[in-house]
View (spheres, rainbow, N blue to C red):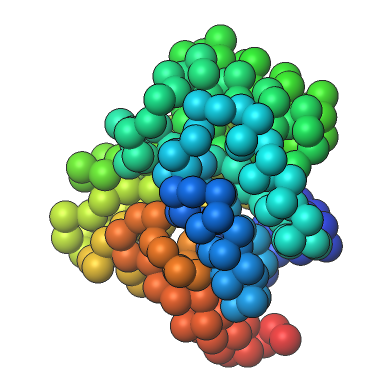
Length: 259
């Protein structure tokens, strides 16, 4: 039996037999963010992700921290992922360069507002090390991620992206790719299985868009520990509503002999 690599997130088990359901928050203003947070939390996701690259005042660290404190208070025991997705990996254009994102992550970590940071493997190695060191100092988990919105690379490259994140000290490794056909979907799932057998940390994987939507439902069978679902707005193509995804996970758990 495969050994579990579990992270405890405020009582949620990331890396257990059933993936966690995470819903992104994509509001552009503080007022809209507060409303979106309340609406999404009411739908019961396991985790929420603040996609701060959508947030118009992103260059104002004080405004980000103020909104983050309100979100933390509203979220209660629900874990929060903080993500400023780079534009070249599918994020929104914003005023921060990689150095600016690193400084923002430092401030957010220091304020103790979130449970995980998501930072791309494509960032300069020195910045990856800085984010890793600062997150450890503050007790914040780190997701190191790779996104390809153009196509699905080969099996071995995908496995290497997972294992690279592990080597660099990530707490979680994430890979998200765009399929051209069903074979690409199988490639992503196969790479997840292979990496899961070798990595020391939980993995997150998905094949995006309509062709890859099945991976968001059955990824846990292949080693993915979290799946993203729509609360109010999607952050990537192929996401499905929270209730639908949770129902699928429940049915799979019962079929596999879980609770």
